[in-house]
Image 1 (cartoon, rainbow, N blue to C red):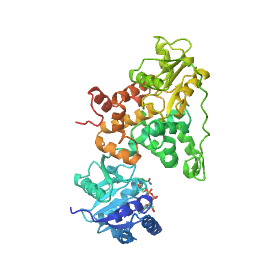
Image 2: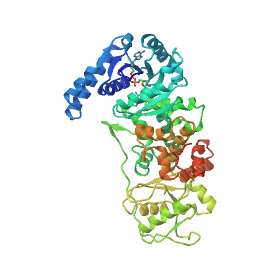
Image 3: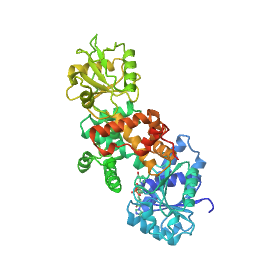
Image 4: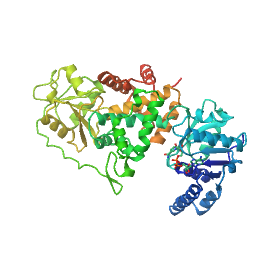
Length: 506
Ligand code: NAI
């Protein structure tokens, strides 16, 4: 087939408008249709306003805007799609309605016209089932806002012809987007890979490890993410994300990794959707997130004696290096002296387990998360047991903040906050690779562009932290909690066993 020039777009809502914008800017002829005619004229008005701002900011010339505007033809009937080389459907998320539209389209368009759906949660194979030529049907899943989210998933249904996907890959590139290929599985790549951050964040909150704002601060300032789970949930809004969490869980037949949280069920029922309702996990006043006042750190007493449990070689090396930098003499006795603060550096274990296994004094024991490094400025996370005395906790906080680095105190948790969130994210991506839903490279690209995760995507992030440490965190979390959601992915386990990158495939 000759390359795509004429693109029909069905549905002129948020997504249809965005797709129309990038298609027109790429000099494609756009036919825009909506059952609601007002939606088409509204989309055109909004595009005119967006383009006017682009001119003001010097990002587009007046001529470019005029050319783009001239590419969009408002359509009042589905029959206007007859000329199209590609039709992209972006209507209501309802299988029966989409199938009906695809069936009608097939009767109108040429036999080599590609039919694509922007669905985020329905099966492409199921949509194509209504068509006489399912080989020309594929998923073309853009993200909101389309012009800024520069990635698009090209989804192959069971009957989709490879040439259909290849044509979509090519036109995506012409529209300035990065295409990634995915199989027709629930959540495709990005919405699948994005599950662990939300779900593990909610599990942490449910266990009373710490408050929402602290989880977010740790994910940003310790683990280097742009946003934590609760900021993200407030942005996407619970009326959207709570049903998605339930839907993915059900579509994977109650896979424990996707088990949703009753926390969002209650908040959803109470209309606390997020930013758009002024109240979500945070309260918003005039669009501004309200945060609690930061608490000041206690005074560090001179002569604090510190003993570090040498149970974990990597953690021990990192913490002793830090304490030396902070000017603290580490007591090197074989057992902890009676007057010393006891520091442990667990990977996936909680304080109670380490205290019990090594016969430590729980009142004097605190854990420090060393997995992400301990350089000055990177938030440090201190975890206490249910028996750790306040005086010892205060001294640990004072010591670890003595170089002006922010410190968070959390309650006992298998894997602190960042270890368990990041290990779950890496593990989830490994499972996507193991199921062949996408290549390792496409998983990293899709997630880094679609979700903004650091280090070039979750598999590269796992390599950066060290696959062996990620595996150890998961194995410990699994052992301590008994929860199947933490069982390591075979993809991860085999690559660690064979000492190779998490991006290695056959
Ligand atoms: P929207 O509600 O903003 O727009 C949908 C438009 O489709 C409306 O203007 C409606 O009048 C029109 N429509 C409904 N039934 C129609 C029909 N039978 N024929 C023609 N037009 C019809 O919805 P939005 O957000 O643009 O979503 C559209 C699709 O894109 C859905 O499948 C959604 O799951 C998917 N999607 C949405 C994302 C988002 O963040 N909003 C992200 C990625 C995919």
